[in-house]
Length: 319
Image 1: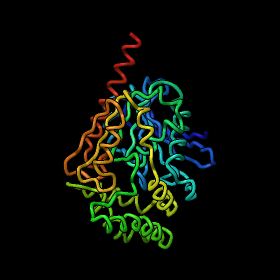
Image 2: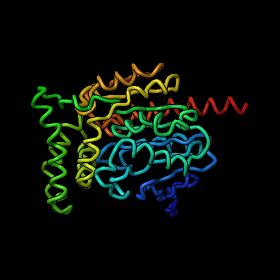
Image 3: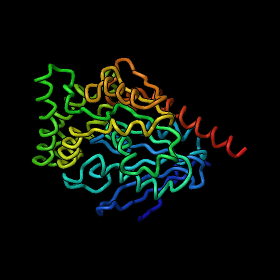
């Protein structure tokens, strides 16, 4: 592990913020941001969406720091092939790779104590793979939040279109984006993000869609590399972790989905909720796939429910 210290939050008395690099099992550098002290009783880790980066959770980071301050350690990171982390070859762009990377982040920055994990889209898929990739971490888990995600059957998603047309478009869109990434410079795509903007507005957001949030996601999509586009897409089409869900039985779990989510529709959330004993499922009316942006209060609020429960449990144990 290599680390470098960045500036403080700028808020007097607020949690420290440090930037780090973690080296994966296959030699890739993963960018990690850690907020809070090492001796906090609870670590909260937020795993982001495909083609995004750690800023996928920027609203929740602000809300949780404001609410909890030094009470928690808050950890975000850029998945391999995303953001400030190293690009990964297509064959290494898989859900199990993301899960093992998450395990390394936990080992480095939350080696002991209780954990609350939240995952958006492919970030949630990586959590569903935890029982097979890092079963040793399950006993430390005090809460799981699955946001706009799936445990399988992604190859049946039709983007809200008739089955044949939907399946064709589902398979073509990542290839189109990957081709644009290979053929056009970043500056060219930033100047003319016509396709990226159309895809974001049509398939990723529900109602209402704030222009600044749409622009943020378009910017992330433009910066995603071609192997990130094609590799993770191919792996998600075979993603099947429904058999792992029972490992989360009786762990406080909430599943969130937008009623207009075209990438991981409500049926996918329901399958996760059915597979975990005691899980709660909430559907956000008119929201799309980007719940951390579209329904900030809902996502931050449900995270807080899990955190409050864990902190109360820790307090009872001490008492």
